Image (cartoon, rainbow, N blue to C red; front, side):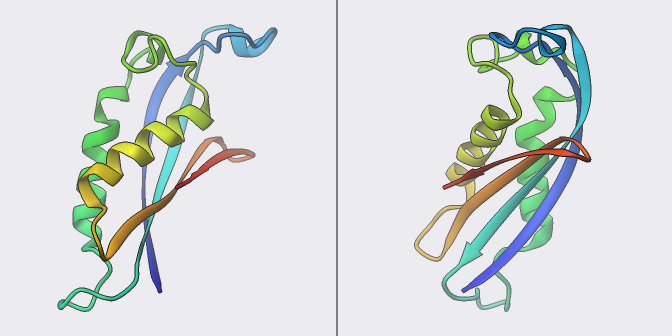
Length: 122
């Protein structure tokens, strides 16, 4: 089994719902988002997936969240824009692009700061 990761950063603001205190106030983060992909065998080229492809797809998925108020952007207009939910949304979107009989998106980590990280496992 092999595993690779690629990450990107998105600057976005949000207001948490159902979170009394600071979380309910408008605030922003430089969200660091890392996707991890595994393969049960290597491709003919000798890789899990080309890093460039993973990075390009990851960036395309998160680009709508760049420099916006997440609460105004689907699915976070109805889904609470937590790091946990962001990790799941990114993981599922990336899986639709990459998953096959050889390759699988296995996790997405989202840091909203150096000290706070959420992980979604698939």
